[in-house]
Amino acid sequence: MDLHLLLENRLAAAAIILFGIGLTTLLLNRNLIKKIIGFSFMDSAIFLFLTSEGYIGGRTAPIQLPDGSMPASAFVDPIPAGLVLTGIVVSVSVTALMLSLTVRLYQRYHTLDLDEIAQLVRKEGEK
Image (tube, rainbow, N blue to C red; front, side, top):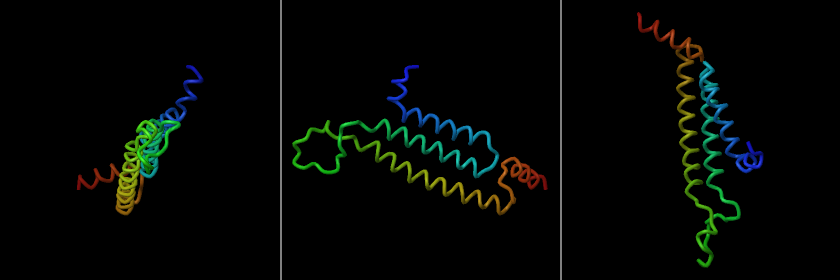
C-alpha cells in the first residue's frame, strides 16, 4: 500500500474506520444505548465521506456570483453539502426517536439489555 495514496485519501480512510467502529459497536453490544451510539458513529462516517468526496480544493463556495464572469468550474458543487445537511437532520430525528423508544422500553422492562428484553417479551407472550 502506497503511503502517498493513503495520505491523499485520509478523510475517506477515517470515514471507513469510523464506520467500522460503529458497525462493530452496533453488532457486538447488547445495550441499547451503545447500539444507538454505534449507529451515530456510522452516520457521522457517512457524512464525513460524502463531505470529503464532494470537496474540490481550490474552488470557492457558490454563495454569490458577482457579475457572472467566473466560470462554473471555479465553484464547488453544492449538492453534496445539501445532502449532508439533510442527512444530519434526518439522523438527529432518527436518533431522537430511537432514544425515546429506549426510554419507553426501560420504563416497561427496567433494563437496557436487548437479550433480557427479548426474554421478558417472550414470557409476556406465554401468559
